[in-house]
Image (tube, rainbow, N blue to C red):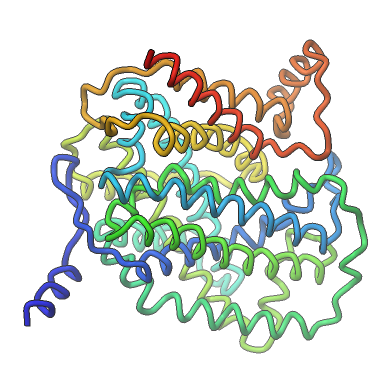
Length: 443
């Protein structure tokens, strides 16, 4: 009888309203696996699959489809392991992601990455509503675009107000529907006459891998917002690393097959899904499921703001943010998606390297997440070193930004090699710098 009461109590438990309240440990492995698995299947994975082909300056793909699939799988697996590492501190401390940075950088210094995270999450939330609206119009264009944007914004806001309930909803219903839709589309697309998937080269392999890794890394700054509710650290790591990686690989391969069928025309990437029998029905599952992406972005934005204003009610923040991303989605259009991913990766990959090194291998005296945690400039320096390494290898495609780093390369007489992965090297260098500077400052 008592176990039944405890189970029902856990099912009713919700995330705390402020940072002053403890986080309930109520999410098991399957709850979290369903959550991360659903985040791994995104409409952006279909439309963004082209980025793993390492397109050159004129937009032509460098990698063959087969090479792109291998690069994507390698990048996704590495990114999944990094995501798993980011999940553990939340489960161990019970603190959200940006609050954890108080222990890494100090309370005041944590505000800088928090503001950056808020900005990029608002951008992601806006992009997701735009993607949902555009995909919904592919299903039925008889409704004005703004109607779909407003509806998606309303659903996002409702899910955000009850975050743990939304995670359980994904496990019980949405994950099964998504799995069925994925299997159905694989069967249908593999029956189509595919072109030669080996046409192309393997040049730019690590650029493609980094593009896939960047998508996984984009969730690193929010992982602890959910794993702080995990019952165990093992469940948090396994669910994030495996659940997300498996479904992102499945989704990206499907997206690359669709691109092959439309000869690489990214504007028609949804056509192979919609043109098969019952394609509209199963594609609608993906469109509705996309709301969990905007939900995660919006909820984590609210939790990030709480690092700046600890006593702010997350429900009030969620409603306000829901309105903001909806208005932005009505006014904006999707810009340079690949450049956006590259910028996110260049910031948060080295930050994760610093966090992982210091949290797991550095200090042994606990993790100070109080509002008076002392500033740790050494960790800021380690983060900056990793960021510079990333930019030297892969500065992205924003002209002025890339031009600046090209000038730095010339001064240093540095030429990046084809085997260099910006993500891996910046992660390792930042981690090594964190360990070295941590020991020096402790002395």
